[in-house]
Length: 259
Image (cartoon, rainbow, N blue to C red):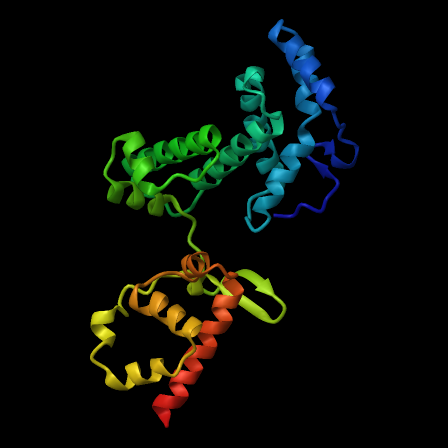
């Protein structure tokens, strides 16, 4: 998706207007009084917000014009449903709605589709998740989302997986210096559990030669099946550091076992 062009949907993005908070409040007051011209002015004054949101989907192959129009639909929904009495910035309320509209559009246009019933469950889960994030300012768990839409947790996971855009395990998700973190580094290893590893005495001896931090990382990653993200959160270091330490520990263990 090319976003470096100046004109999107006939709109010169370099000349998009900016509104102050006072101007936005004034326009909302006029909109509440039925002033449609004020609504149009507020939409135009927030097109930069739409543009900034769709830039997050730069990896998508979707046409920028189409995605910009979809983002504008999300913006209009945000304007029509915004409650000034909540004392939150309009952009704080609008961004999740614009982003959600774009995500739904991309999922609906995904070439690999699940059944209609699964898609319906997935969209209900997405709406519920966005509502919790908006109202409670936190990311809900799958269990909470499942309770909210009165579905089994496993069904929610299956439905969300059915509409997810397929990606390569070798797609990079993070890069710092010469260290690249790939999607495969975030995948839980469900097979290498303690029951499968504990019988190997040589392996246990190799682990004893690791530092405390390396030992902990290997234990969490391969005995408990946690992702590098989860390990980073648990031991309070960056994901890149977990990746480096894990590679170093595995190399040390391999050298011991080869010896």
